[in-house]
Length: 304
Image (cartoon, rainbow, N blue to C red; front, side):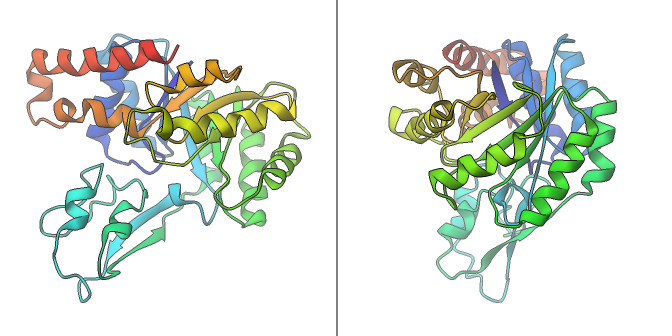
């Protein structure tokens, strides 16, 4: 299964609608969305336009300290208006006047890394999971995902309990090794799945989060390596590769003997269709739509 990641922090209705439409027309059946009611509605509207009534939706939330729930902020008194952030933002969340559109910001932190003066910081923007997640399940969301790349165990336990109380078809855990060693990764997962039925949990093995800006084997290597760690543990879970995933991921995973359940692609999937999906006349021009769909089809085919 291929899952297209629209962005756990992507709250932009129109960009999500276009992305879901393009990839639904290309044959993708699963989409990862921000935990906002209006974003679920954007996806459903796109599905209707694409005449795709069999889509699965995954809604993602994160614990405190996880970059997926962060937003960029610019301190104007320190900013020298070099526009490095504007030129390097992959989601067009920064305008030329150095204003950040929070709805488009996905928390990748690239702008902060490119800033020469340290004018950009990342701040957390959380949601009320107890309010939003039951709504999502009641409205057809099949997968609830928790990003756990942080050290706040109290927040992790609280949000994981809320997800389990919602009783989705699948509960998903997204984890990488940026803050933990292999043993801690496995220990944390084992503890979280200890009271769940076998194979009702997805482990999204996040190689290097939000790093899929290139389409080569090296970029996707850590995603495959992370999946291998989960596979070797023998835990009764489904494995989904993520973090640096691209059109080479499936091929490399098969060569390495990874029995994956799915592949989640975000950065690369968004990047290849962006030249067409971002055009103001996208909906009026069928030729533009078709070019985007053809590019998406190639990625879908490569991810089987």
